[in-house]
Amino acid sequence: MGLGVRPAEAFGTTLLHPTSVHLARGSTSQTEAEAVTAVNQQDGITYDVSSKRRNGVSAVVYTFVVNNAEQNVIDLTDQWNGHVSAPCNLRLSVWNFKARRWVSKSFGSINPVDTDIFTFDLSRPQRFIHRSTLRGKVRCTSKAGRFTFSTDRIRLPEDFNP
Image (cartoon, rainbow, N blue to C red):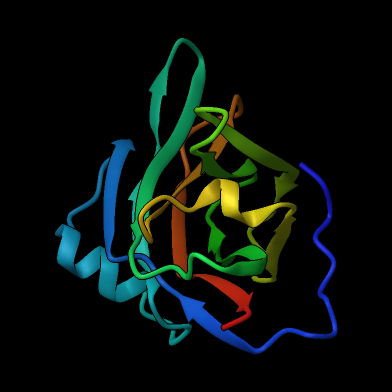
């Protein structure tokens, strides 16, 4: 992982949003369609997941898929916006198709008052796109106890050349 640099010759920017969301750990009353709708706009409508406790650690983990990513992307950023009911350690990941592994950035503990956008830039973004598809993962963990993890928006701005 390295910091992406935005070249001056960028042609355009596309804002990518998840087309599917899959809950891997935690519980929610929302359907997948409701989750996708909730994470596609920063409008106060959130995808709310209650953590699940296992082996002394409470966690929320979900994956998402983005379709229609540009193959000729030159800069890619993963952004999460939301809030939590209690502190948890946030990690954002994107699947590297070439290396066949998750590339992650940990943000440490986020607090209930945090509603900032957490962002990380992906160097050599072509590694993260395969047949116009991109896969991401959001994870928050806590040893202190259960919490609710609410996502207002996930987006991946991409700059590309024609």
